[in-house]
Length: 235
Image (cartoon, rainbow, N blue to C red; front, side):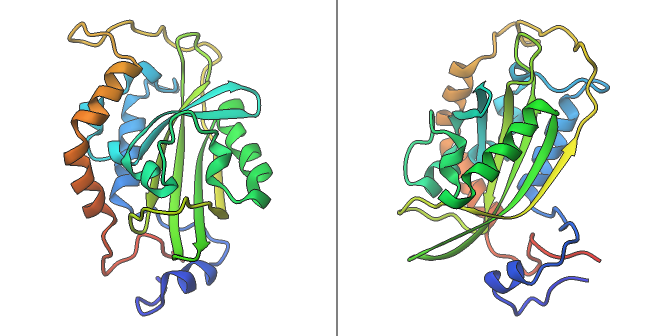
């Protein structure tokens, strides 16, 4: 059963048991659906297969991560929500910057396994500063690059509400790392979309800017408080 609605966010998060929480965020559900739909059998999705127009519901919450070398994962592209939470443009920022200093080693270690295992990763997060407590969930889904290596990832960050101002640093409350089956050799990377347009970072960045008014409204609607919280215990 779920935690009582009358409890505040801090109580909800600190009263959780070790059981995995239900994933009831519409944004995260859509991210899972989209990523899964890009898979062909056991093959992981291609970075170049991401279609911004098909990502309209999650684009504002999304980041493209790039594992430049072991232990170094950076934000390649980012939507409005991660930028707002960090109070800055997050492109080029190392992923460890999203986490509290005392948990950065743990965060780097678990994020690294998204690429090396490979695996999907769900993190339940909490940020506490002078402006109050903020709960969030981060979903990281592995992607293949043109060399057929798992060096990219789609990350989707969903806070309980969208805030701006002082950068938010998060503690990890719960983590779920789930290895995904992948063949030793993946299918070839297509150079073009069905329409014949090469899909790359420039196009995705253009779409992020073009769709900004739309996904600002969508992000606010998706993270607005509801009667049924998207972070809850299921027994």
